[in-house]
Image (cartoon, rainbow over all chains, first blue to last red; front, side, top):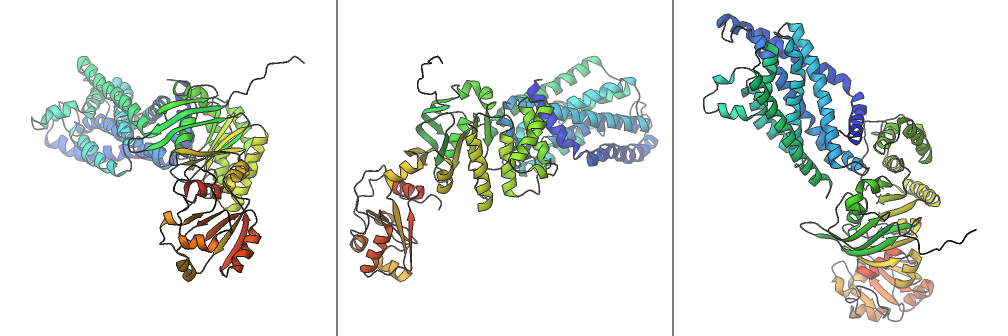
Length: 257
Length: 349
């Protein structure tokens, strides 16, 4: 990463200092609520009704790492929708940044670095909540934090590429409704994708969230298969790199014309 | 003292055949201009004339389509970052961080130019004094007035101590007081040796700030010179403005519905670019009524302009012919008149 890109991180950090209080509460509250309602509430029923259905782990322990990956997807996606659009179209601060020696590439690298930092904070908070709920089964779980960052980054890069092509925010509701929500529900977060109809399973294998969930769950439950994990990480990295290349092009078209 | 061979000073900006085409339109069509160091240079023209596109190319944020452009002797295509390091840019609409404080806006921006936090902070303090915002230093930008935001944007553009300041319509939308304060600050910068390049569609702004300017219309440069030169070349010393009642306007055939091609009655044959349609076959009634009273007569929807060396004398002559305008105004010619002469249109519609 270039020094120039670090200036973008510094810029965002200055901005974040003014707004962090509200977001910190949400960062902890969201996993607490989900784990309490679905892990303990719903999970309690599942564990009683069908003991052993998840190869001996409680539903809460199965669900928690999936939620971590899903939360990373949500954070990475959200951070690259409205905030990025505002800096391109509404506040137009990117235009000011590009009047300095920075290039579009520096700007993009800086933004993705900043989003990675935000993902890191989120994942660390999430892990603390998981430990609090006692739903962790392996010390490898610390590696679930970078795995979640990579998952979020894969989404952030692709969504940034999309945001830069938009001329207003109406596309975001379609993005959340038709992409993010279905992924959240059907990528293995709440139930193993083996439960999906056979025709849909290959679709799930192609999505980044499936691989994010697979990684974080393997690390948290200690059931990681090295080959599978390498494939998961490679797919996520491919989405991140491919998204960043696309974003470099679409941001350039939006800002340098 | 040793004698150093002095040639002409290298221009700070040099454009030859500079062209910008977008898929749908040609925004800038093969224009040539030079800007010398220390000069205050303006692009005057109506909206859509190509001023902003030209500024963006100079600012190295818009690739040129054809022709050549050199800024500080460097090529924007290859040396964008090096050029931008020495530029200050004041965009048409403010691009400030509204949630940050006035001071943070400057310091953060200074960091993009690789200033240390200490140095950026020191310069921020000085610049806030310069633009008279020191008292608002710790306030957020959000509640600031338009004039204050503009001054902050100018201060931000100066954080890297630029050799060249680009100002795209610096005072559009400001009240007169705010405009005069800005002009005064820009004049001080010019005295310190900063080269200013600005766009405007206000003739008074161009007259106040520019040593030299080009008038742009429809992607091309239609005239170039100092404000005084342009007025001398394309207008008379004075202008007599007459307003008639609606009934009289109908009688004169210059009402709002009149064909624009017929509204010019020319009694002078000095050549001007774009003059071809000012061929003297104007409205017969206008010619008749004002013949011999002025070098040139221009009929706008709301008033009639008589271009003459002596406005008072012309006003007396108008009355002697039995014409009774509702109001009579004698004024000095301005760049607005130059623009009208060259393009047949007013600058701000």
